[in-house]
Image 1 (cartoon, rainbow, N blue to C red):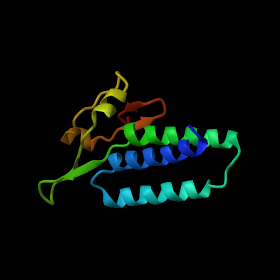
Image 2: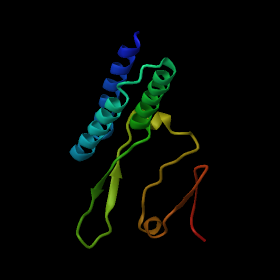
Image 3: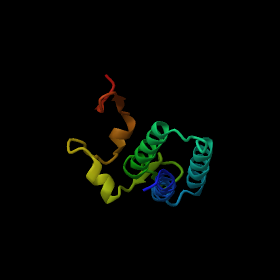
Image 4: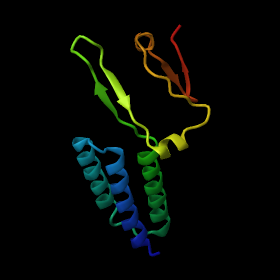
Length: 128
């Protein structure tokens, strides 16, 4: 496939991935499309093969990020007095991409009052 075909195909893949990642969130979807368009326009004059290869690699990484590493929570609140709760739905590809040692635990009143501290290396611990 020609370099132009790879770039245009990558642009279409990113648009599809952003529609999937931000489904139902008009503002986020619009901002993602503007950012994609601006990024592609800013790099439209690049013609050196090495730079183009790096940009195409970036397209692949951005697509993976959108498809597997971005989730959106939707507020689920019964009344105004209650602390907001959020529901997150994972797609099958997102579930499959999770490391096997990761687990998802439901948020309870106790866990909501004791926030987790996330350190590098994907280690979560309660503050002491």
